[in-house]
Length: 146
Image (cartoon, rainbow, N blue to C red; front, side):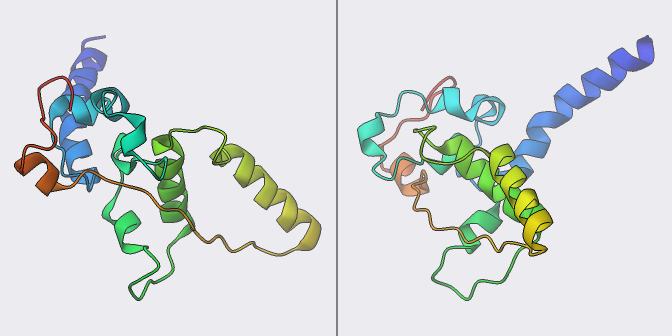
């Protein structure tokens, strides 16, 4: 029993450290890392014209690199799935984006019936918190909320 308690303690301590390395967001507050949606809950929805504030999810740098402007390389299925889940989770309107499980099921069914792997293309615009917004006082970061 003691081994399990020690292991859980190590996991709880390491989780914020892992999340800080995982996210490309400029926000690094511990409360943000633990619950991004709650930390950003006071940002008025009318400020998010795209309907997706990507900082509501812990996202990787890869999402910023696959932007349609630069010479974009292909990504693995795992990277694509991670990006899709970030966009899905960051979305304000749950009807706008299909959930990942449904999309994955449709892709598997398509492969079974047609013996073809679908190619997924992102065509989303999203907004993110920028360092300038915090440094110029446009957004104020506190311990509990932004």
